[in-house]
View (cartoon, one colour):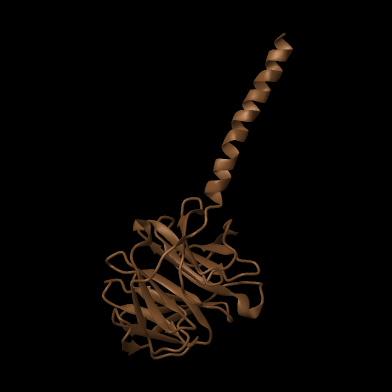
Length: 250
């Protein structure tokens, strides 16, 4: 009798776990929510690959034509151009008054002064992948007080660095197979995928995907948030700066 009761208990317990499985899978496999821009602004810089909000949130920094850094107003009109040209700059972020730019092909990080736009230092960051599949994006995470860099694809890998660029960890993020840009806003990491035309909201504590949104943009390459909480995305192919209402409110 005890044996029978034990078997029945095991079957009941297994059934209870099974009953939760479909719901869990459905939540994990939820499709991205489709969102539409509220504003589209043509910009004149060829092949814009990144957009970054300034420290005082009054202007933007845009990487263009693989080699140049521009300072613009909030509607993309150039106010300054950095007095240097790089080779294949793809991602950028701000930290402590410096603009950190990832140089994909040469495996470098360029450190530029935000006020003067002068190049202060160039660091080498190791990556063993193909030359054109180096570090596509870079972001500073205050929660961990370190940098996160990502290769674009094949494979898409995230690299965690200290503030002086000592490698701490490397890992994939489940559900993300290609990266074109990253940004940090309101305590969360946002990852933009060009090939999926999707923005992923990531928990920086465990790198799990919390939400995702589909954007109607060809070749989205850069992402940031303005002081109003609106999301800005720049398109490489289209040469347009798109503004979206905060996707968390949609």
